Image 1 (cartoon, rainbow, N blue to C red):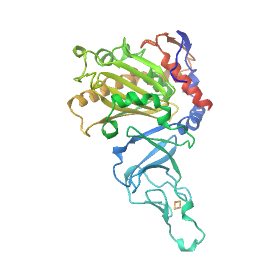
Image 2 (tube, rainbow, N blue to C red):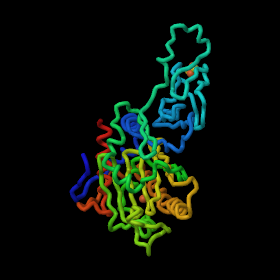
Image 3 (tube, rainbow, N blue to C red):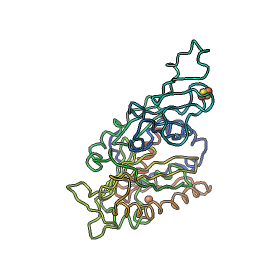
Image 4 (cartoon, rainbow, N blue to C red):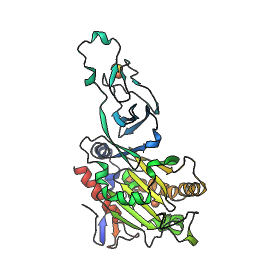
Amino acid sequence: MGEMNFDGGVYETLPAKAYCDPTLFATEGAQIFRRSWQLIGHVTDLPNPGDYRVEDISGCSVIVMRGTDDVLRGFYNVCAHRGHELLLGQGCVKKLTCPYHAWTYDTLGQLRALPNEANFPGLDKSRHSLRSIRLEVFFGLILVNLNTDARPFAETAADAIPEISAYAPNLTAYHRAARTERLAAANWKVVAENFNECYHCAIVHKTLTSGVVDPDQYRTRGQEWGIHHTSPARPDARKSYSYAADPAAKTDKFLTWWFFPLVALQVYPGGIVNTYRWKPISVNQTKIEVDWWLPNPTPNAVEAEIIHQHRTTTFAEDGPIVDSVQRGLESGGYNTGPLVVDADCSSQSEHPILAFAALYQAALAR
Ligand code: FES
Ligand SMILES: [Fe+2]
């Protein structure tokens, strides 16, 4: 597929039903969310043997754990005996003991002990390990996939790697420093489309467009892995926070790699990095989590400035927008509408919505 190109013209949105139908939402869970790479966190979240985090992927509970051999693994959070869940939340354990009948696993997922074991002479414990899931570490970010046949994330995202290496070179060693979150009352596709098109930026995001990015040079392109955004930072005289935009240090751009369907990595001018993770909760509820990854767990003055500015401007401004669109889509007074696409793929063009639709329809059909 490579880079997607669209001719200029008028295209149509997906029909309103696509954003409002609980049956379709269930299909998306099985066909898309459970078959794509999901962001769990960063290797520095789980520094010690036994550190774990439980996450929900479209109704399926999974454990990501660092073993006593220092290897990160992902497991279904399901006991091999009769299916009880093993862990909740996050923490650090020496072993995993099921709350139901106390079958006990080591941090590598192998069954080690069970009550009354002497009376099960035929039980081969090596055949009852926790069931593993795919896990990859990408620039320190931990990604998991419930699809055993999934193409490796690093292979899908291969053409993004040189630019991420250049603009977020130290991400592997960065730490979780701040989170901004919100429960949007909107379908995940409304949220994804809003995140990826910048036709609304000059109207809704005055701080972003006047003081962070240059709308005349902001470009978005559909890719095999998602949608790529890039813009030079504003010249010094106009910047909205006190970053140093140094081309030699590669801190002079705003960049986003949005990885279909629910993950993005962003670099703000000054080389300040965040990730987005979207969690579809129901057909019209989407949890949005933005984590800032910085050299130190406590933001410095400039980092604190953009974290606050993002939280109170760009992030906050999109909140009422997506909720309002969802109400409109559910109103019965709307089915489809036109998308304005220019051949230059300018920031005034809605071609990212076509790129989203192409990725979405391919994922639903696979
Ligand atoms: S279900 Fe886990 S020990 Fe029985
Ligand atoms: Fe926006």
